[in-house]
Image (cartoon, rainbow, N blue to C red):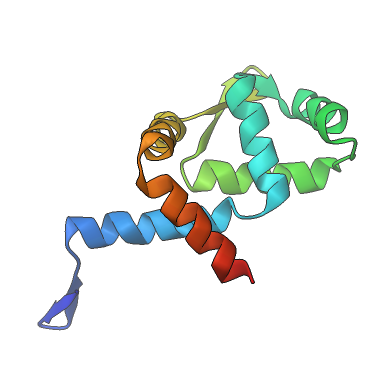
Length: 126
């Protein structure tokens, strides 16, 4: 847990990592944001207009430029994407953090615990 010492709050590395993971889960819980993240991960250095076209094609649902911009800003702010500038053009790419999360997901899927967690999550949704 956290400890107080002369009114300062201290956290262990694992507490900070777990808090960050919880925050990331909340941020990508929104279906649109998760879909945008998947598009950027599969199509690095995409312009926002290209992301919107891919989104429409894959999900048969338009996404407004302002909505897309808001989601991209959140993904950049929380370290899941980077915005890169080439002149006036801004492209997006996922960070190494997303690759690490994908790697962890692969390890998790191959473990025996995956079935247990999937069943537990189904029960929690009921």
